[in-house]
Image (cartoon, rainbow, N blue to C red; front, side, top):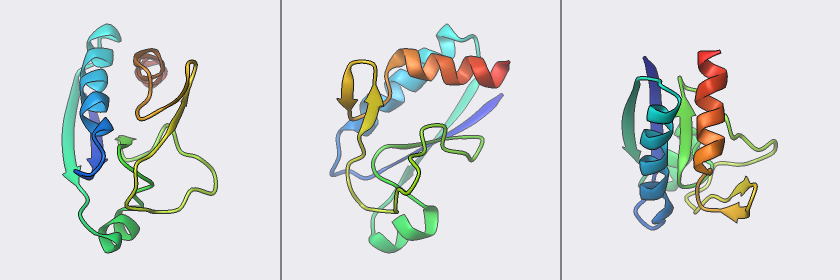
Length: 103
């Protein structure tokens, strides 16, 4: 069982797409996943949780898409995908993360 957390704030709609893709990727990778949603509502929460933008995806507590030098921020996050910058990782990227985890 993989524990996955999606941290988000309501001002950024991409978190919903990320949750849908996480669930679809888990099915494709044949991984059982438990998804926790964590709403981040303040700059203080962002700093305490090391929230680097919405959505931040944590796989067993680690950010597989961490960007070196990123700072906590109550902001929308961009991900580098094969199709350019996007508001959430691509389905293929998430499948790869799960596959590496299952390893």
